Amino acid sequence: MTNVIEIKCPGCGARLQIDQKECEFCHAPVIISTMSDIFSLSAQNLSQYQKSYEDDLKENPDNAELNNSLAFCYLKLGFYDKALEKFDKAIEQDLNNSETYLYAAVCVLAGRKPFLTPRPEIDKIEKYINAALVIEEKGLYRYFQAYIKYDYFKRKFFKTSPAWEECLALAKADGLSSADVSQLFSMLKQEIPSCM
Image (cartoon, rainbow, N blue to C red):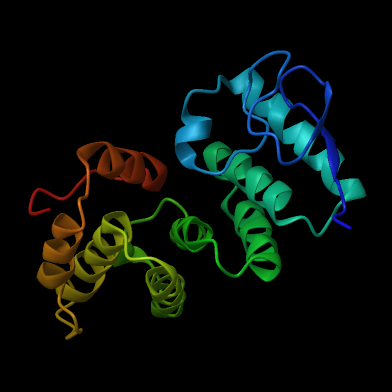
């Protein structure tokens, strides 16, 4: 028998099952699974979602979807350490969600340019990106990989394989959209390099 988890709708507070994508009462998203879900939320709504997920996690601390959703709230607010902790918790519970690895990598960068990031943190970012790519080949993952390889490895004259140009070509071949690129750099709080 499947264990049914009930949570409060972050939008209106109605009791819902966690597998519902949208609240039947206020039509707000119930679980945040991508940054696209959170970009449209106002600061007030974001705070409401954060509080709701924190409360629901008290009853279900090991739920991957709730940890992931709270991590998105923290990431949007710029609380990188807290977001990374929740993304890591979500990864422990669900090893197959490739997007969680991408956003964990974004958290490690913490709004800095890769060029200014210590090498152990770059290595950690690469591990997250590689894990995401093992699960699912996506242009966005390759693009982020190209950015790291360009801004850290190329600018510091380190050899790396594949080179950033190869990663960028693979990203474009995988159907990378300009909207994905804009969202990624919005999360990174950086300007898109002119060569990319």
